[in-house]
Image: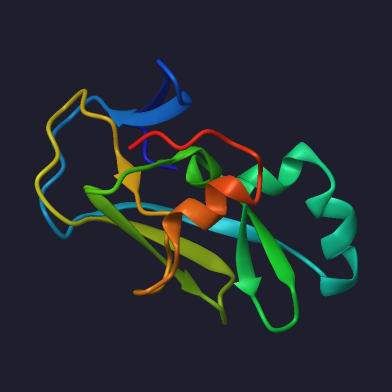
Length: 132
């Protein structure tokens, strides 16, 4: 975990991830280990609040992943300043800056995932109010 990262409350969002130092575009922010949950546990996990902190590891197999480090706490933005990418083989998720990020600025990703995915669906599936 990056020692410069910290968690702070964000009005309307809960907790968010921030950095005490500036982060340059394309810099690796954090690499987080994943705990992969087997597909036969999908229905159970989906019926709990825990699903709000998971990512799909393999959609076809309905495998979810819990992202350790700060990974499950990055908030969504329609204009994110970071991206996330899963390394299936190593079972880790990499977070990188997509532009320069100022010290104290919230680090956000897009929950839409792949191009063409419906961002609002992530929120409506969880009965959550969407905030841009």
